[in-house]
Structure formats: C-alpha cells, structure tokens
Length: 149
Image 1 (cartoon, rainbow, N blue to C red):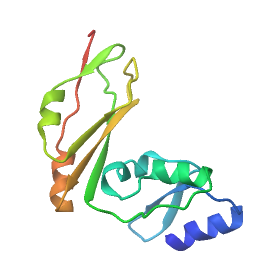
Image 2 (cartoon, rainbow, N blue to C red; image 1 turned 45 degrees about the horizontal axis):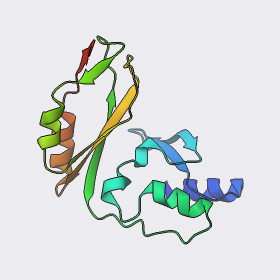
Image 3 (cartoon, helix red, strand yellow; image 1 turned 45 degrees about the vertical axis):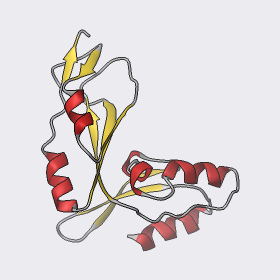
Image 4 (cartoon, rainbow, N blue to C red; image 1 turned 90 degrees about the vertical axis):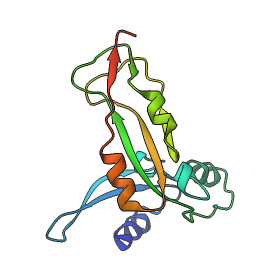
C-alpha cells in the first residue's frame, strides 16, 4: 500500500499532507476510496498517539518548516461519533460524564449546533497498551443523543 501512495505523490508532483484511504478486500485487492490533500479524520488519532500530529505536520509543511517525527508513542483506537436515526436538531451527548471518566479516552466534539442522522458530530481516541483490547472496548461503546436540550 505504501508503494501505491508513493506512486500517487510522485505522479501528482505535490507536497504536504495527503490521506490516501484504501481498503483491502478478502481476496487481497486494494481499492482507493478517497484522496484528501489535507488532514483527514482517519488520522485524527495522531493528536494523542504520535509525537507530531497530522495537524502540526500540515502547518509545518505550509510554512516550509522541517517536518516532525511521526513516531507513534502509544497504540490508539479512534471511533467516529455519528448522529443516530432517532434524534435531529438541538442535542446533547448522553452519558458524556461516563466517557470522560475512562482513563486513556479523549473526547473530541466538533461543536455542531444540531445533530442529524449520520452526521459526524465528533470522535473519540482511546489510548491503550493492547490494541485488541482497545478495539473491543471502543467497539462496545454506545453513543446516544438526547434531543431538545
């Protein structure tokens, strides 16, 4: 997959941060889903898990400053918080206090005034020492919205 990304950048002849989102199917075929010439939600975990986040790298690139280390300092699992099918309009996230009590969990809400079905309202990053445990824990989390708040 790295070779595909490198070839794309070589052909485009650009610089900066690119997200080249790829999927691997069960037969081993690679599909490019999205190309974004900017910080991308697939790398939001870098805020907590890497020495230099994708956002800082982006600014360094724009200002022609040396890029920082992309070394990962912790394993991390990220999950989007999406609007559900039952609540639209003004909202609040149910049980937000429970989320904030979890050691290693970072909550990022995007400040959107209204929730809509499928709308990305934020994300969580969970820092963990065991990736399988982290994936299991984050996968079991429920994000519910309360309307009319």
